[in-house]
Each structure stands twice: as C-alpha cells, then as structure tokens.
Image 1 (tube, rainbow, N blue to C red):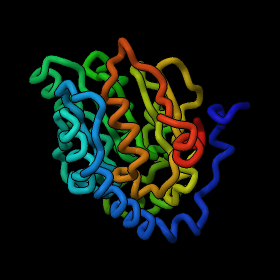
Image 2: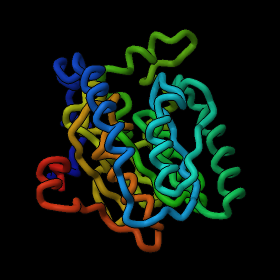
Image 3: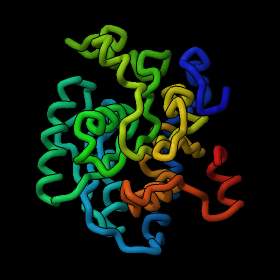
Image 4: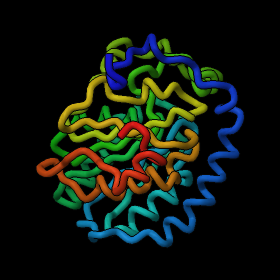
Length: 261
C-alpha cells in the first residue's frame, strides 16, 4: 500500500500538541505571508478567469481575504462565497451551484474552485455536479475521505443547535465524498494539522489529473501559508488541457517545504 492509498482505518485523531498550538502557528504563518505576498512575482500574468474561494467550518469570507487578495494580484478574479459563516449545511451545495453557474456565464469560461477544510468538500461536490463549469479544484486540509473520522472540529459542529451530527448525514452523501471529481484536483495536506487527520485529506490514488501535496504548517494557517500560496499561483496557470502535476522549483524547496514530492 502506497502513501496515497491509505484507508480511513489508518487515520488517527491529530496529536494534542498540534491542536494546542494551532492558533500560534497560524499567526506565525500569517506574519510570514505578509511580506511573501507583497514580494511575490509571478513569471506569467493570470488570464483573468474566476476563482471561487470557499471558507472552512465556522469561518467566513473574512478568513479567505489574504488568499483572495493574493489571487487578484496574480491577474485573476477571486470570488467570495457570500453565504456568511460556514455552519456546515448540506444545503450550501445547492447555493454554491447557483453561484458557480453565475460565474461561469459571466466569464464564459470554467471556474477554479479553492476550498479550505470543509470548503474543499463543497468544492469537490460542485465539480462532480457540474464538471463542465469547473476548471480545477484545489483543497486545503479537506477531510473528504473521512469527514466522520475522529478529529478536533466535529465536536463543535455537533454542539450547534439544530444540526445533525456528522455521522447522521445522508449515507449516500458520505459514501460519495471520497470519490474523486472528474476534473484536475490538487489536494494539499499537512502532517502537522491539528484539526483533522492528514490521511483523510488525500486522494486515495493519484492519477494524471489528481495530485496530493504535503506542506508544512497548521490547519488554520493553510490559507496564508506561503507554500500553499506558491502552489495556488502555479496551479492557476493551468487549464484542463495542459494540466500537469506540481513540481517544486528546486531540490531545496522540495526537501524543506514539500516533503511528499
């Protein structure tokens, strides 16, 4: 069994040390990202296509602001999800489907969807529902292969009034979540993730259009992590017709920032 073929039984709840230091590490990543975003120079100007960015559980568009500013600076048009705070409603999928269709018709070209944590699960389901409207999907620490696995976030969802427990979601939906979308997909994960098991944030099998990339960092800081931003900048340059796996710019970067490559 390869590293990309781990089953849910291999996953464990994130270590308490990673969970306890999540906020501190995320703040450090935010601090590092400020000069990075200002100094970053892309080798190629973006083509202006739309990029829909979906926040994680209990987060809002405010959390994705730095990432969207970075995307806009590259020459693309980022879009908020406009649904307030992400409380994990299944109905959000239908709302986002309307948003996706609007962006697709306005720009007359497929949309890239980036989803952080739970937002990545929505992104994948949108791509399965409307693949012709989706250019590619990028997920950041999204537990699509085990949303019901032990983690440090589901307890909060279960406490929300009127919410079903994760394990009580539609069995058909739970069964469909791990299945890959029929579009180019980059699944970014971190073994230092303090919120969800990193093993369930990966595609079961890498293919010519599906890649898993490990970065170093916290779950809460993935949206501002310079390594993640570099991957996003690179991925946005590609269309489905010329999409290829991400490669680090140098051996040093490979070893230091992208262990899985």
